Length: 247
Image 1: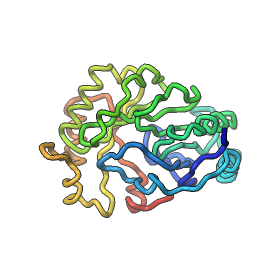
Image 2 (image 1 turned 30 degrees about the vertical axis):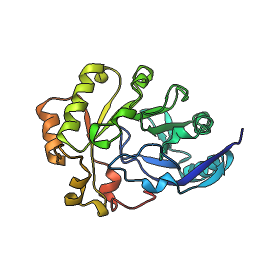
Image 3 (image 1 turned 90 degrees about the horizontal axis):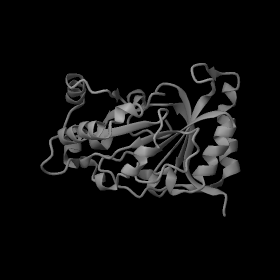
Image 4 (image 1 turned 180 degrees about the vertical axis):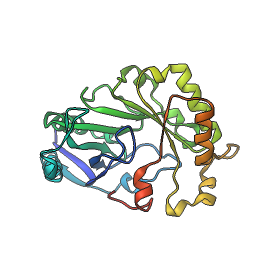
């Protein structure tokens, strides 16, 4: 089997989401995705990328992490920076599995962002899986692989990306039906528009018959309903322009 991956980009920045938000992180963005979410902000990763060997990817991560060689995240007893595999959909490339194992063996805290449409059980148990449950307005709700829920651990996280009132109601229903808050942390993200998707244009992304929800409305609903979730604001889109790459 080839030991290559198709890589869109590798860069060092701050983690913008999850319970690790604000910490330095090396991102490995892999090419290709088999979903087409209505709000996707990384469509450039569908096809753009170059083949790299596992060894070259590991070498680049180690190079970017070198300035942190004496840093340690005391609460996790692990080194900084974090390393995250994202995409696209990283699980479409089978060599993402040995890459994650090698990174864990190196002592990194490894995260993966995955759509939830693919089996997460083969992932090294040391990896922290941040798994989407796709809401109705994404257009991909039928792709949710609910069998994955049984494989989630307390160190994993479930993310809901919400753009409509119906998305919120659906997410609330899934939390109750599957007792998700007893499994792992739950993340609610509001769809943050890119420059090309200003608020008046974002509304066009919402399927007919659904009710757009603002960021304020989403937060107020979370508080009013006492939902056991973490609202996340995507720090990278606040610090830099929302469409900027490599951050």
